[in-house]
Length: 148
Image (cartoon, rainbow, N blue to C red; front, side, top):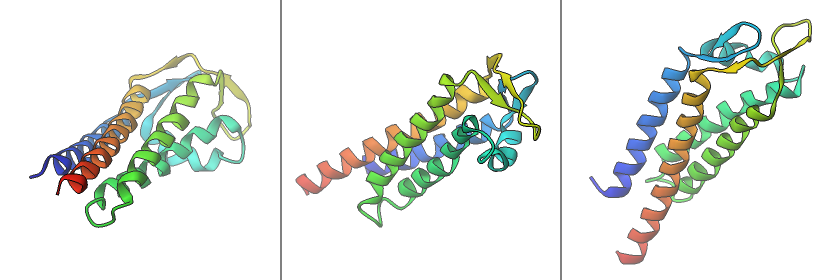
């Protein structure tokens, strides 16, 4: 296995594992704590209701980064998609730290965020790993192209 494949598949696997783990953990508390899987399932319903819910969009962006890592050996520009989408997902997800309130129900009432749970930090870690994997894959592929 080449080094770039190790980075690509290793970071892809670790990123997916972290993502799956974050779904079972509390993501944030406002006023009640919300598990990651609740947010993943209900998130699309709140996109038009509040700007604070736009952070959910980091999920499909992360999925596109995973796709880029998965097909980087067959589509040369996919490694740049993996890095760019991973970075975009990380920035979108980190923007949740700037939010002070979040809408928790269909009434549209904003509740203050009391705490960020382990699930949120594991979710961010999943994106960071994907981003690093995309960058490493792009760099190592460029080196292989120049030397071979």
